[in-house]
Length: 165
Image 1 (cartoon, rainbow, N blue to C red):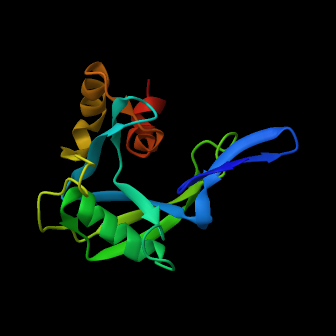
Image 2 (image 1 turned 90 degrees about the horizontal axis):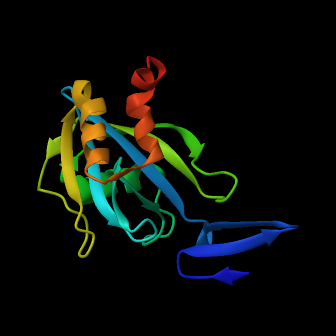
């Protein structure tokens, strides 16, 4: 139906949905070390709001054939300023399967070393948060109260606290 540089609108029978162009994938990074988790906050144009998220990035958008592990390590360092010693793949997930064909691979970063302040590439203006895991529910509630939208992947950190309510 329509194709841009990164997104393609598709139709299959009566069903309309969007996907990534050129089979680009995404890596989402769960980076927890020393009882702290790395989160990023940035302005998201489609939402017209700040959004709190796990660090993430596209796989193969700039370097064709780049693997998920290499991409995840690069994106984590670019966005947060923390370099991992090791990346383990957890699995592939779909965030909105009724509307988007895109999936993401969730990975876990280990052996983190801070090498710079992060912030992403020019124009991203990413704010890095290093939050104690035990304070994550309060931190998310505070960000929501400030008007920040919370990405669904943050549920990986809130799961047990939501089930206890």
